Image (cartoon, rainbow, N blue to C red; front, side, top):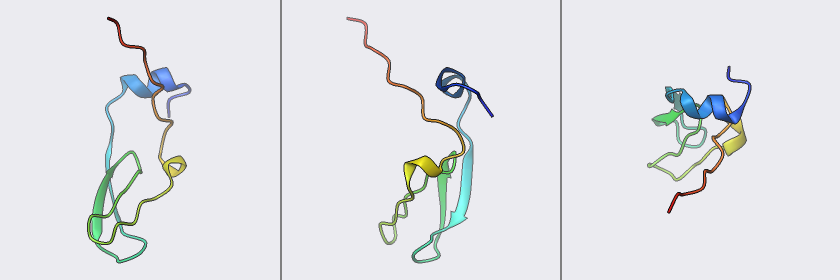
Length: 60
């Protein structure tokens, strides 16, 4: 598991699968973050498998 957000940003996301907690539909997500298109259930973003990358400033 990466130790910093910078490391997390350089790795490729992993596609993961679970049964929806509300309706049971098999859903796919990235790094443990899910949203069900059948019933609208979404898991808490903090439940992901690694930290989200930090925002970077745009160069203009």
